[in-house]
Image (cartoon, helix red, strand yellow):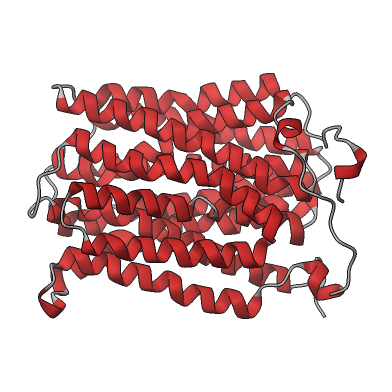
Length: 418
């Protein structure tokens, strides 16, 4: 029999981390394979931004829908459904015959992946006490780095070596990565149960999901959403445009991209663990939740302006600076994603995490569109990197202004759940 304090919870954290890794592998397929896809049909920087925005639009909207789905169906069934959906959506890219079909596949992929992080946040709320939540989320969020580490060399290897059944090698990138997600669902279905199911299958029913309007009336909700809008604008730019930056501005080919583009993602995975671990360490040392979260957030945000130096340094330093930025971003992201669990009861966490994710996706759309426009109209990457490098600092001050104290918010008693 398992309990929320049993070692089994860390197995669950690793399982969810694997799902997030597959998610980031899937979303990196197009940015890394873009050069090969362009051999079959032209894709300008503005069209590239359009394809990224297609993913982010449904990703953000389904972040809300997926969060609500988790709160209604429960984590086990909800996560299973969305993983099957996004894996099939990823595979569908391989059948695309043009930009419109690719855009449709990106819309479907975003729709499926939008439920991933709300589900992860619910897992943390269900299985981990407050003092361990940041560490658990760090492990889970490290999947973003793991997926990013695997993606460049794996995708490059498939493009260079897989030409089965007469299909273009880039199409097999999507078929193979989609199949990995379907394999994960088998393990999830066999392993995952909520603590309530494990301890007492006949446990009393949970309180009903809290109405969205009640969650949105709090200043703190909007503060976290706004901070995610700003910081994820930078993150999605880094993630979706780093391979293209190396191809366009630094003269790389696909093999060279595959050899180095994984390094910043390795730093990102480390940042997840360090950021979450630092916050949990501060809590165990007797600091308040408010101090532990905000100190770690501030240190993470302070690293981000380094990316402004990227256009002025040599290639080894480019990779180093992006690695520092990826480290700081994912340390930051781990902590921001844990804030809903500090502020809201478990039966609201999925919904609030959904709103926060929608804010982040919309930020990615805005900066991505701006980047595509500027690059197609004669500008270099420099102004976009200056904007991106400042956003986390602004987001940190927004959190200080709107989330003045991290403690459970006053909700109507009938909706409360421990």
